[in-house]
Image (cartoon, rainbow, N blue to C red; front, side, top):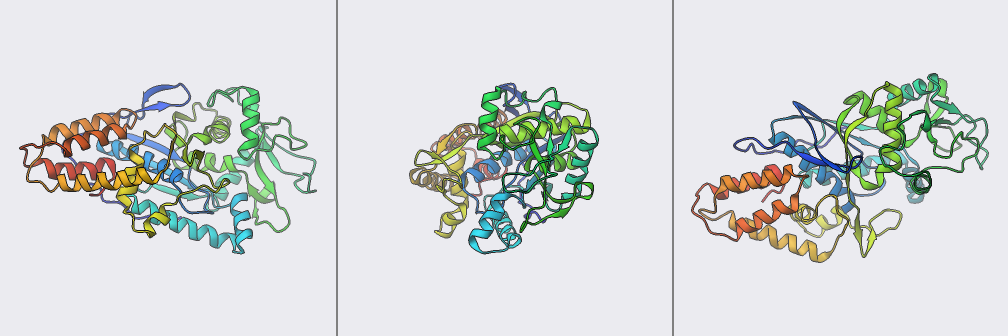
Amino acid sequence: MTRWSEIPRPKLPGTGLPVRLHDSVTDATVVAAQGPVARLYVCGITPYDATHMGHATTYVTFDLLHRAWLDAGLEVDYVQNVTDIDDPLLERAERDGIAWQDLAEQQIELFAQEMAALSVLPPQAYVGAVEAMPLVVSAIEKLLAAGHAYRLDVADEHGHGEGDVYFAVHDDPRFGEIAGLNDEQMLEQFAERGGDPQRAGKHHPLDCLLWRTVRPGEPCWDGGQLGHGRPGWHIECTAIALHHIGMTFDVQGGGRDLLFPHHEMGAAEGHLLTGQWPYARCYTHVGMVGLDGHKMSKSRGNLEFVSRLRRTGVEAPAIRLALLVHHYRQDWDWTEKGLLEAQDRLARWRTAMTRPSGPDGAALLARLREHLADDLDAPAAVAVLDDWAATDGDDPDSPRLAVLAVDSLLGVKV
């Protein structure tokens, strides 16, 4: 799958600091990567709708991490998937009377345009589930051969699905350690987030789908001994991550709603496929973005889109700034007021950066690096720049260094 073009990133004097991130598993702040290579996997989009602010917040967050690692002198191996075959995509394509492949292609292209506009550095590997099908099939076959997966001998309520393959989640003795939920909580979230705890024939209600045998009218692929069908959700990311960056990578990232079941299931699959632990050293999750007091989600329909704002003439750097004033772990609401404040802030920064001099540029850069190394504290970094822009100074190099720092570290092109 073609990723978007490289985004120019100015080189800054000196070197950034080791980045410390909040780990959702331990609830502690840890050094995100020891180096010299930092390995990052972030769960990507299901391409059936444009990029809303929840998506944008997630990918801008991990772009900050990407930039801070590069600034600290690390090489970054960043992998992101695209779930370009899944029930929501098929349902939206049928609703809109469009081929699912065309819908996916359109939305992947739009997402790439929006990421480039928001100055999000592209991942090194950008991999669709369809192109990764051989990896997925191989992983499922391995789980079956080891006895960690099984076929159902009964059909679903529609009379289909005999032979579906499920993952025996409790074969991993560490299952449950990622999210730290009890059985009741896991069952509730599993049902809410794409699971099928009531499916007849499963060994345990939490066992997750690995391979869905072909149903009438659905796309399918040759799964070898699995038969024709298509993969479940979690195994897609596991197979892609293990192939491209390997076991025990540094950071698994995504929205907080992916902690369970998606990241829990993926870790269990990785443990049993490799016999190694942990799947990832650090799990970092982004808070939920709302609109009018509710989580912004496609199912609810309360979305604000990057593409719509850009069509109305809103500059992408202002959109990015409107995201950066919220710490990535907090829940918050997108508002028109917040966007207006971001536009005003961008104008103030631009004015200050055209001055002949400003406050100490080296001190500004050092403080920005300190805040970003502290669990990606972008709001604190923005506040430092607000203070800098509101203060006179006699450093003639300061305005130019501020322009470069804001671009390189925050991804905001002034």
